[in-house]
Length: 95
Image (cartoon, rainbow, N blue to C red; front, side, top):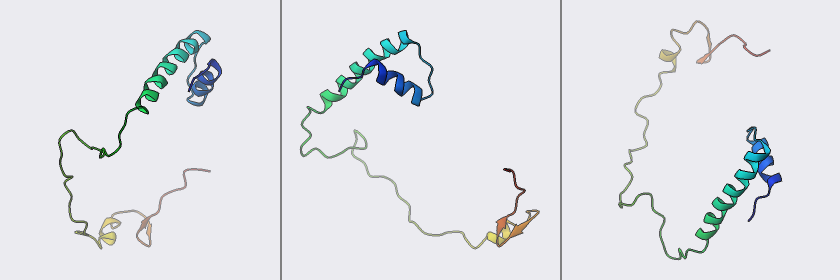
């Protein structure tokens, strides 16, 4: 894949980055170099290689997914100036 000057300017515009023509020409070369390195990765044979999350094999620490504290909606909204059905009522901020 190759990036041309028009593509660089389009990407910069989408990213809301102002670039001059000189900067865009420099970025064109840099982006083509980066994409060249990425294309080299496609040549690597990864058949049978398991994905890794770390260089050291380890299991993620997990906790039991249980509710340990609940039914506190009344306590949570107790100090609110205005509530309705355990929801906070706030003034409208967008017209």
